[in-house]
Image (cartoon, rainbow, N blue to C red):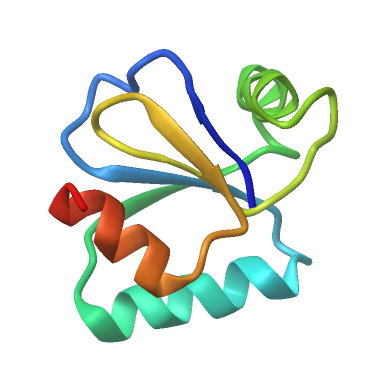
Length: 90
């Protein structure tokens, strides 16, 4: 898991960058849905600008899920607990 600051998304919700075939993405989405964590999802295979952002955060790799928080910080392949802690400001 990595954590890095990136440009804000212009939203007050979490943005998850993913792909349709990513098992880790599906697992995190399910966990966030069950926990009631609001997020929007962007498929990096359909949005080249988003793919570039994911590459920037991950040292040139298209590693998903990459989650960007309202403060502009990002985490790669976080657990639900990681997401909740970041949102709580812990």
